[in-house]
Length: 203
Length: 219
Image (cartoon, rainbow over all chains, first blue to last red; front, side, top):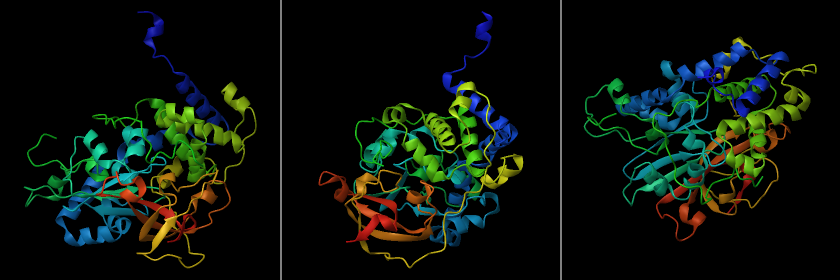
C-alpha cells in the first residue's frame, strides 16, 4: 500500500470547510475549542430520548398530558431532565380519529431539543415536497398505513413554532412504568411518520 | 422568493428513503459547518432568517444537487462575505488577510456554548391588537415577494381557518433583509387538502401552516 492510501483523501468540500474555519479562527471570530464543544453538546445532550420521556410521562400522567397539550414549552419546562426546550413548542395528539404529521416544506424546521438533529430524509426534497400533498404515499414509504377514514393533519413548520406528535399509547402496556414506556417511543412516532413499538416486538 | 426551496406539492422527487441507524453526521466536516453556523449566528454576524435566505438564493441547480450541510456551508460563506466578515481573497487564500469586523456579541468562545443550547425566543410585545380570531376564515394572500418569505406557494390564494394564535413574533420577511424585527401576529391556519390540491386530493387531509398576519386577509 502506498503512503498516499494511509490518509483518506480530502474532498474539495472538506478542504473548503477547513479553510473557512481557519479564516474565522485567525480573524478571532470563533475558538475551535468552542466549535468542538458545540458539536459535543449536540452529540450528547439532545436526541429523541428527550421527546420519549415527555411522551411516556404524558401516557401515564393525565394532568401532565393536559398541560402539555395546552402549552408544550411550559409543561416540559417543569421536567428537570428535559427543560432546555425553549419556547414555542406545540404538542399535537394522535387519536383514533386523527393522525398528525410534521414537515418543514421550506427548509428543515424540527424540534431539535426534543428529537435531536433531523435525519437526512426530513430535510430532503422527497419528504418536503410530498408530505403536504400525498401524506399517505409518504407513510407508505415508511411502511406505515392508516385506516382510510382517519383524518391526516399535516403541520407545515413555516415559523419558529415547533411541533411534536404525541402518539397513541400502544395496547398491552397497562401498568408499565414511564421508563418502560419511553423505550417504545420512536423518533418517527413523534414526527408522525411511524408508530411506537408494540410490546414484545423487536426494537 | 419563488425558489426551489419552496417544495410543498412539487412532484418528481421520488420516494422518501429513511436510512436505518443514521449517524448524526455522515462526514466530520458537516459537524464543523453546523458549529460554525451556530457560533457565527450567536456572535451576531447574522440572524436565522438571513441565514435561511442565503441558502434559498443559491442557484437552483446548486440547491437541488447539494447535500444539506453543503447548502449550509455555501450559504454561510457567501453571507459572511456579503456582510463584510471576510473577503473572497481570504477564501481563495485560505487565510485571514484583512482586519476583522467587530461582531455584535463578540468572539464566540467556550463560555458561549451553554447559551446556544437553549432555543432562542421569537415572541415580542404586540405593537397592535390581533386582526384575526380563532375560527376566522382567512385567505392566504396572492403575494410573490422576491425576497425572503415564509408563506409557501401552495397555500397562496386559498382560504383556511385560524386555529391557533401564537402571539406576536419576529417577522422573518423583515428580519431576513435586516430591516428590523417588525413583530407580527402569528397564527396556525388550517386548509382542507382538497382546497389545495383539487378534487383528486386526499379527502382526509388537512394541512396547516403558521402564517404571519401580513400574509392573510379576511375571507
